[in-house]
Image 1: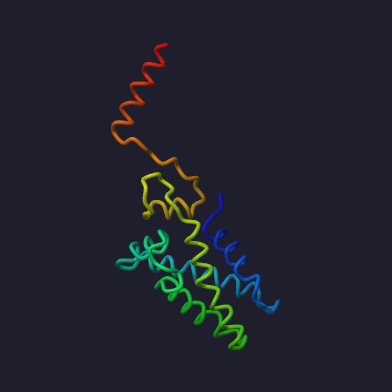
Image 2: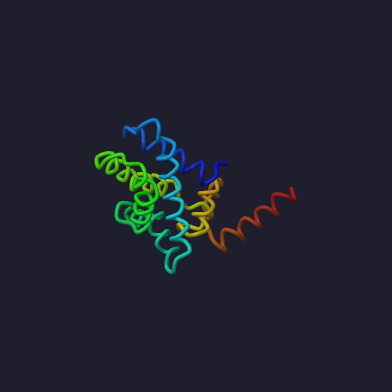
Length: 157
């Protein structure tokens, strides 16, 4: 079971493959990207209306490129990492451009995990914790009753 930080680290490493990052700051940049995205998700989740923003992002109803989550992650990354490294405008731009890709890939990993037919906060938590999706429940009350009746008939044989 992968933790959120492991999942982020893999997603960041995958997204950063096409960008030349000086070797002496590579771990700082990759960790900074992961930390910025994680802090953005956390701050968004705890802000008023933030859960709805995350649900929209992870259900595909909103675009990662225009999401407030992405904007906040970009701001955190620029202020906390890029401003201190002096990598130049071209490299800074390329690295900042990874954030929508990272969040887009991360949101692509979130799906209906609890089998209730929608993506909600529970699904986000389950997906990020590495849980396996439950089978979608079908048949409702009638299916449940029919399953119970058939189960008791078959047990009697």
